[in-house]
Length: 346
Image (cartoon, rainbow, N blue to C red; front, side):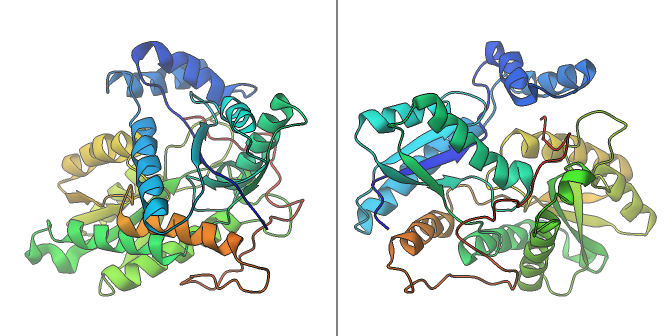
């Protein structure tokens, strides 16, 4: 199929103190998020001057993709639109229409299936196209990439680098801890033919990274960034609770790897570099946090590879994969259907 553009699709984040509450209201609109939780999350952003790293990280990724495309002869303009903050996706789609784009691919900054991590981006695309009108370009989201070598490899390198900072005398009592954004348990088991896909893919990524980076060490997959009404159950254990459990088991050092994320945005630098690091210090645990892919060359080339899959003629697609879970280009209509309270709010 012919395509004439790529759009980088991301979550968005505030870029100044005045942006924080309007941004958070966009994120939580239509949901019963307690006001105290909104104020708590706002304070996280204000701790960093009201600026989330995510937009700058998207700019850097955008520049890297454009340079990689140019170096490899892929003649597609690359746009950028966000779910929750400027540049808003609807504005980007309008600009694409004005530029003559008729059919585009979308690369979302989320590797996994699930409602917030995949289906909601499909809904964002549909809403943006509806806002623009009948002349809006068709936009097809690229496939999930949790087990692509260009995603797994940078995480492997980062875990090895973080392990290199841990005292070798502690290695036998070191634990790998992989983290991802928690979601309500109802969303994790969303309706449709692939209910539970989010957890299954994360478990596969954790296994792939651990087996390559440090096959001699035990590892766990835990959760971070829980939010929403306290009566709604979310995936557990929380990373901080897990660190306390590990300390009680005689673990002396932890390497925390945020495999649920593609860049070191606020939920990484606050939840892991600030809160979890403080918990580890309190417990006397040596603590090292592995980096996320960011603009690692392998990750950037992975974007080109995913685009190339869709540019090839039908039947000529060879997907680069390390795992065994099924993949597809187009999600089933009833895949990862939302429950009444599925969405992330931080």
